[in-house]
Image 1: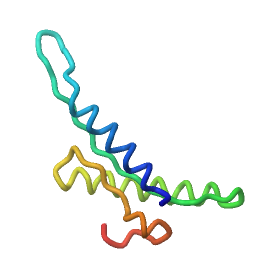
Image 2: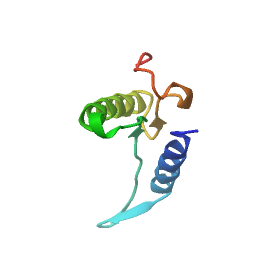
Image 3: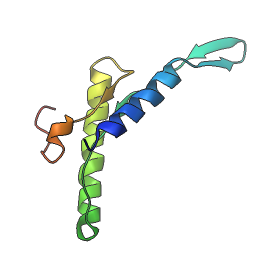
Length: 88
C-alpha cells in the first residue's frame, strides 16, 4: 500500500537513532527523534498545492508525535491517504 513503506523507513531510522550513543566531551548522550509523515499523489499541474498540503499535514503529525511523548512516528492511516486531517 502506498505510504506504508515510508512509515516503515521512518521507524527504522527512528529506532537506529534511538540506539545510538554520541560522545559529547566527557559525556555519552542518547538521542531520540520524532517524525511526522504525510502521503499523497502529486500531478504535474498541482505540485505546489499538494506540496503545501503535505508539508502542513506532516508538521501536524510531527506535533502529534511530540504531544504523545516524543520519540515516535506519526502519520495518517495508510487507508486515509487521500483524506484530510480529521483526527489531529
